[in-house]
Image (tube, rainbow, N blue to C red):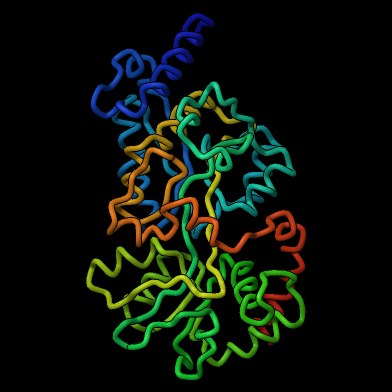
Length: 355
């Protein structure tokens, strides 16, 4: 491809970025002609979240630009960071866009795995809350972590994390193995009233919970199945896994525990050495616009950092953090501390499981 064609393609992609909010109504013929035949590779979540992102972010972007989008589905909520590091270090990352949990992001920044993204390449940044913009991409998918419970089996709604320890739930509770760091912080909120530090008292609290635990789950799809079948009556889980099931007739509901709930957002980043960084920026910018963000709130009840997104009252309740004031009620997490201690926490977690 000539230098002139490279410049034209970049210009077209930036033009698409500026017009992304209206792209579905008026696709750019120029952008389609230049981007046709290109392939963008993105990691995506599994389960319902992955489906909403594919239906309302990935497919519309592909249809609008003519770009073929190849999806690599993550098992659970985190990408394979060790594999990604090896690929980036070798100069051959397998994806152009990677969404990730905040501990993954801290790990990636420390290991120089991501390209920086200049605000001038992301017109939609003008509409995002500034604290949701990182040097390597926006933090999207604001999910809240609270308690799901079976409304047929539990007539009085739980109000606190401490309710997980209630003897009436013997063999009917579950914890998230994939985000075990949040399980540890949750236990600390009950035992200490604060999320850190993780120590002997943390695991003593978990040991007291053991009689109630039916299983540990690793993916959102597994959590949904446990809730759907009624095998588990109560568990910590994110709000977006609960309300779609409730609308399907599953007898469940979601509460934000009084000790404090957790809210996280997922940075969408471009790995260093990505094959198609311009396409990646265009896709991320499009994903930040109102239409994809509104679809996420409507379909899965995850909040948006886009200040132009408006939540109808029935959606706002399920979103949990529909305003900045509500977001401020979430328990703050120190991700630098989490990453520094994850190996030790993992060792202790695995020992606790086997004890």
